[in-house]
Image (tube, rainbow, N blue to C red; front, side):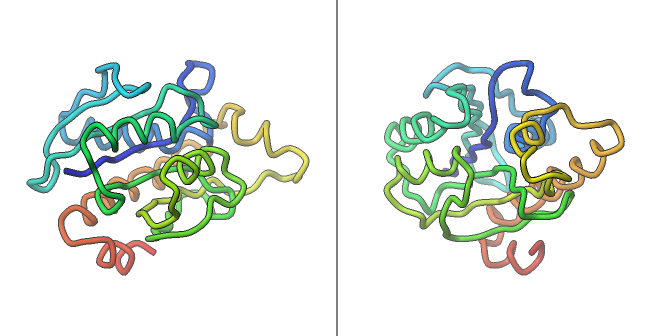
Length: 185
């Protein structure tokens, strides 16, 4: 079984923001595979289903970004999962809009959600898909940039990133992370 977790913020005011690329990816993946992510469990919203003949648990933490790892670790412990069964999806300012990067390990950078995930897992050795959101025009505007509403003209570009992340997840499940990295990085 795979645990696929998308990082984001739960309240409506954060929907349609760059910081919710993880949630957006989970929503797109769930819709494509007819999985309802509505059950409240593990301090999040979860749904189970089958993707590429594998059972998956989709998780959207409802803890706010900075405590995402609290939700993740509850699900990992409950199902006695290993980090090799984990895929984490989140936004990344260091990657161009509409582009993704898949990695097998690495630090959190400046991403507070990933800091929480790594702190709870006590390892940096797990698969992650970083969905590019680009940088703000002014470095001092980072917070408004990630949690501010996405302008209409940018929404389609960001959707390309979440669509690629969905394809990458399917490839990871079907043929492994190395294959997905070769195909989508």
